[in-house]
Length: 247
Image 1: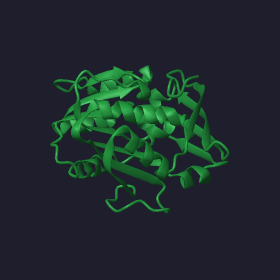
Image 2 (image 1 turned 180 degrees about the horizontal axis):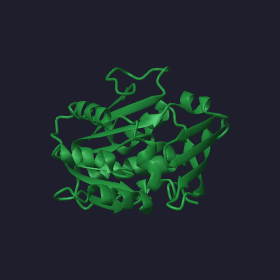
Image 3 (image 1 turned 180 degrees about the vertical axis):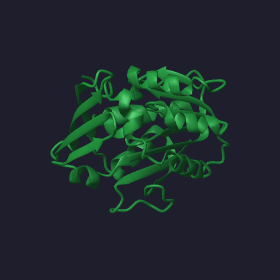
Image 4 (image 1 turned 45 degrees about the horizontal axis):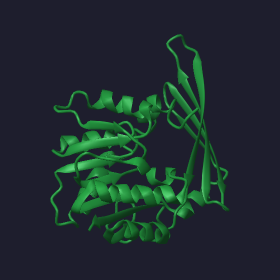
């Protein structure tokens, strides 16, 4: 089963502990690095649209893009009550194409790590450069290489009232790839548990690699940050934020 085909319906319940408001606050602080005011915003790999909704409620004109129809279906339901609802597009990151440029773009919760080929990261950065207006901001985060290495051999359990999720991980150091096997059990109305299985793959990228590719794509003023910290990222950070400006 494709990534997030089954997980989409349970994603919000499984991520209810994520502090989305704090992440949105932090992203807005990073937007201030650019001189261009942010009114229009791209939420790349928007998933079920939680960040999309947060920024729309804060007054931004938001476009959400994701490759998973199942995740976008969840987002559409979540955003339907907004007037007007944000535009949602089903596109892969390397094939991103917007009709109008935006003032800023975000790509949250290690979505870039799901691009398992370096050339796809490079293409995504190039497409983001095309999508963002001159002087606009790009903010995204990735798992640090050290964090992905530490996840090797982990068994992660997430249990809720009507959802049970088991993650088994394996890190292949030779290709810097983290493989997840996901067993998802959902309680059905008749009391039975329905099981689905998915495989997820993420690739680790170094700060140096990502910085070089951002420069090649035409971004400048590239900085790294610790998780929800304005300071520069260091070796202790499991998640690294990047902020940069489109030339």
